[in-house]
Amino acid sequence: MEAVRTREKQDILLETGTNEMEIMEFTVSGNTFGINVAKIREIMMSCPVTPMPHSHPSVEGVFKPRDIVITVIDLPGYLGLHSDELNEKDLFIITNFNQMHIAFRVHTVEGIDRISWNDIEKPDATIYGGNEGLVTGLAQFQGHLITILDFEKIVTDIAPETGLKMSEIYALGDRGRDSHPIVIAEDSVLLSKMILEALGTAGYDNVKHFDNGQEAWDFLEGLGEDPTMMHQNVSCIITDIEMPQMDGHRLTKLVKDHKVLRDLPVIIFSSLVTEEMREKGKQVGANEQLSKPEIGKLVSVVDGLVGFQGE
Image 1 (cartoon, helix red, strand yellow):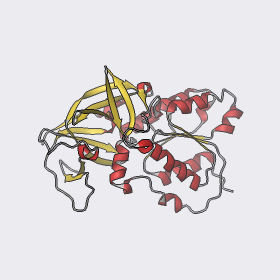
Image 2 (cartoon, one colour):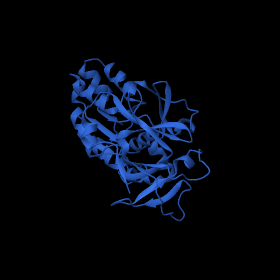
Image 3 (cartoon, helix red, strand yellow):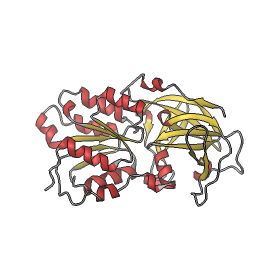
């Protein structure tokens, strides 16, 4: 079974904090979509899969191309863009995020584009499911529009047990309240709600949320160069990596290059925390890097960095 590697591992480490991403364009029933190349392990021709009983309707089954069993998601079916039958010319995009390997069936792969996050717009709430929809961004590239899908939400919709587990927070018990100001940069409406709920349940009641790195940076930069203002308004930053306007690596780099803000602890909390992406995080100075859905560990790390003082 022939597989085509999308890139050598070291290639994604060449540039750090430039606020750019590489998007692989693919099509489903003639519609153009995009996925961050950092999520992709490889592309391969579709092949027969073994159906699994009582699985979600969008789960085709599993297959084992080499050393691991991989679940196959029928992306055309999930999106409501299904053709009449499976085509042997379909492709599998094998992804690696949230510590999982998932294959998504698509119809064609068009190529890779390098795009600035600044050129990616947040979609209108009416697109693909409202505020908690499936689109994380819209990118205009060389005269056509690329719809960037929220693959984490797709997987969580199909298998909710793979998402953030509030049970990890409830297990902490009553910890009292803590007023350390925490800044969060996260573009997913669903994940933002869950992170805010988790931190609130864990006792943190002074949390500021921003929809992307640019909004968070505007707030931080607006504090000026007065250390007192900084300490009064932010004790810790939690940031996703993938966000419109400014990504988490760029935000981290700006913070760590700032003469006053650089001492602030920055936690990267992302589905993309792989071995390669950890290296990028280190290069921009992140204090900690955690993979979603480790929400319990996130709270523990925040406790250690700010000195939790439950009252």
